[in-house]
Length: 197
Length: 68
Image (cartoon, rainbow over all chains, first blue to last red; front, side, top):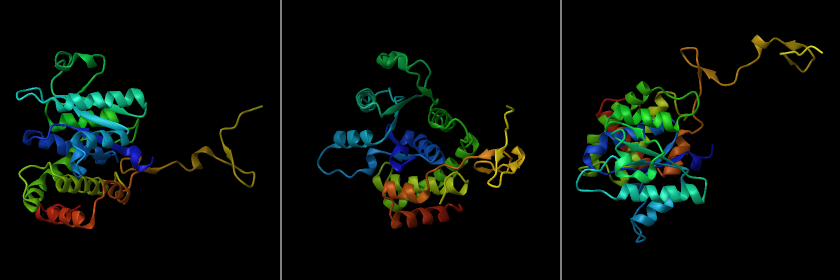
């Protein structure tokens, strides 16, 4: 599979509470040999965030949309970007998307337009996110087990304070930290024998 | 005509099914272990991970006492 075909665009809330789940997404994708992508990795060049998101999403065959942030203040970004992914999947036929939610049946009320598409329910837990990614994006066989991915997540989580300190950031949502997080994840996946050198 | 499940070797001698090589390696537990087609260098190239990123991660792993 060529490198681009392994890319997965992450459309998730960038807030502090979501950090463990974000690291879980990166860990699970790295363990599957997939490449996590985020709008964080593209520098702002005056074309606006939306154009960057559209460009990234269009180049990747899969996107993950976490629609679990429905509390106040209301966040419209994730459903909006899901709309872009849906349009891409219909028009270009080369794009697939995965929905994530924290609570079962809630999406039927908050976004009834997507009724009929089952979201992965993660219960706002690391274990849940790992399970969702493995079941939605794993191959028919030969996938890493959830325990191995959880171990990658645990180790990756330990380097977060150092990365934040190195870059003088309060959260992990920066270009440098995202890039280094992915590198850390693929190195841990390699040490587990999941990715070749 | 009787069907054979064995593959003919180059010299015409049939190789027993049990001796035929298997695709892929085998893990510690005896199950076939499929290694992802993606490689570290491929992922790094695709994501634009530079040597200074790699150095930072190495430093962070050292500080956390993790071997990776």
